[in-house]
Length: 210
Figure 1 (tube, rainbow, N blue to C red):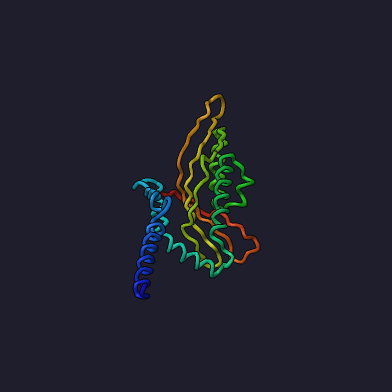
Figure 2 (tube, one colour; figure 1 turned 90 degrees about the vertical axis):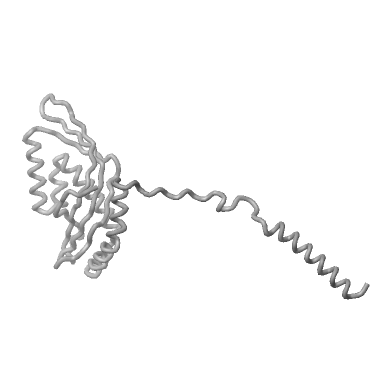
């Protein structure tokens, strides 16, 4: 058989083999990722607290980061994540201590002005003879709104969202009243830069939108 004919035959055989390999290897085998696409996560419904929180996170992120940079220029040790965890714990402690009238716990956590305001509320409740306890239905949410340095003080503003269950027992034979409510507040914390005491104290509370 002439060499040219043999070459043509081998070429035909090679083409057939390659065609069969493509049929096997070129096809998708088994389940592919696109066969089970992950459902898109639904966006929060407009007007809900979750949607408002998401919008604040998007809008305030750049501003908050800029202010944090300003504070960290004065205090390189400032860690926003660690601070927020501490602020959340302080929030729970202060809310519970105020309900119980625990002045000893409150005093080192508040500025004198805030302590005087809390003291007035506690004294009024004691005059009525009421007793109160507060429980957190869920762990409170804490979002850093601002962190800056003013003169020799570090100042932060934190937005808290919490669901509280209050139990108030009036004096005498009155029945205990139980109330569940959603609270949105902005708390301002401050501390002296360069001081030996690194703890933050609450210097202001104000109502906020959820």
